[in-house]
Length: 372
Ligand SMILES: [Zn+2]
Ligand SMILES: [Zn+2]
Image (tube, rainbow, N blue to C red; front, side):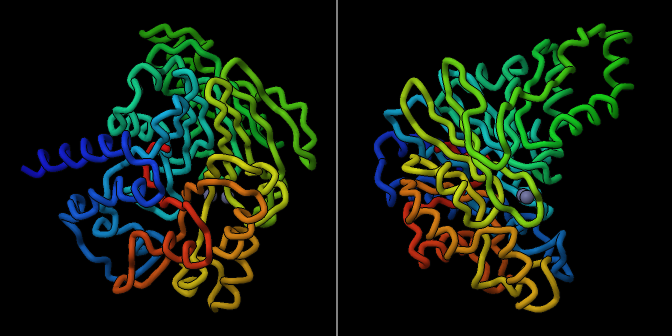
């Protein structure tokens, strides 16, 4: 019975998108499934709130199904495969996006559970043929906004898992300085596994386990084009994210249908981020609560300490408003949410609502498997 209701909810979500194009209508796609409350049982309330148990990770607050909010007249699609943060949540994979253009995927960020996030997205979106798009052989291009662990810990899976299932595609990974060392570390670190696949009983071609860093003729301090093929043009812009020296936003222009989709990674307001999102259709970006910052599970012991530390790293609502006002970006797809609150006042859409109260318009709170 429960299973039947779940499928009905998913079907409703997809069917609605075809005729719904206003912001309010698109919000309703997905909200309609909230009342299903389908992941609440069993649920054991933790004895204390820790980095492993904050309320944003509780099953009872996760209750909506993935939605298709993509424009019906555009063939290029964005899938938010993983929308998590370093906080341990079994309902959000680590940061992982896929932009699909002409039936070919370009991956942005590679967080925890990347390989499983591909599976989940394939099975929750029927709007395009993901079974034949998200194939092992098509795992080739990866764009890393920055090298924090939560955005890169899926790289061993990206490099090695398709290979185990027969892919001979060399991977090409674009990212800030340090990317090449990270790739080399993975290839060397898993050399035992790679060699066994080549010399053991399965005799895989060693080629498919390789990855190289993308040719980035790019001054990290200045924006510029980094990649172009028949489907997309990609430009990179420097952003600001704590004391991490090299962080990037990517601006994708899709050639067949002219969408501009920017991926901001992590960070607060910056000129580079505004440039990346200038008049874009979508900015995929993080967000963090200011109103409930005292409940943050990191950043210091007092509210003052938390505000000081966290504002150097992340996007408060006032910053988000500034980015939207200066860039003119039409739609914001919020991922990597830090929606802290006390359990008794927790709302799944609390951070989105706080952003709207700050004047941010057309902002969605994305979950894993949504399509935009
Ligand atoms: Zn992050
Ligand atoms: Zn980060």
